[in-house]
Image 1 (cartoon, helix red, strand yellow):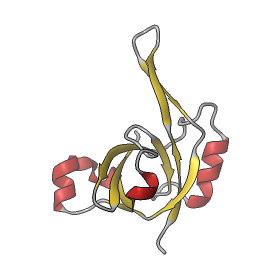
Image 2 (tube, one colour; image 1 turned 90 degrees about the vertical axis):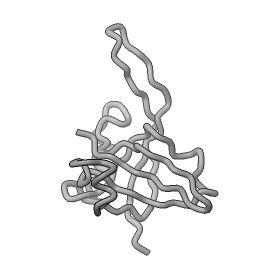
Image 3 (cartoon, helix red, strand yellow; image 1 turned 120 degrees about the horizontal axis):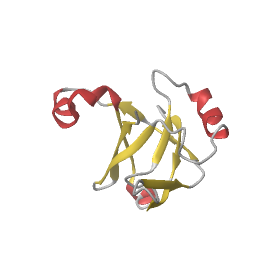
Image 4 (cartoon, helix red, strand yellow; image 1 turned 90 degrees about the horizontal axis):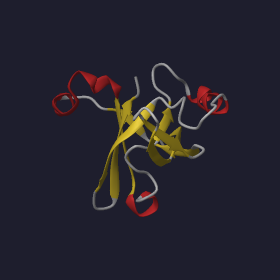
Length: 123
């Protein structure tokens, strides 16, 4: 009903390069339709501080998606800067998957029937 497009690139692995810097590798992003909303309110401010405007939250079916979406995966979602129609173009212009993602999955919290997923903007 209030679902919007987003793409999620699953993180495959993290390796350290010759300089000791961690390099992440991702799968090709997959299209999903979820209802994601910006986090707001006092509790969100306590949890994320001044970064509250950079956090989106969604609740998805646990039975369908548990284990498929994990912390560290990258997401491409529409916000005040990027529209839904721009998302596909972001992915097509990537050299390596995950490079143009604008959010990172920071929290995956399984509950009874749903999973809470928090996405933090990548700076």
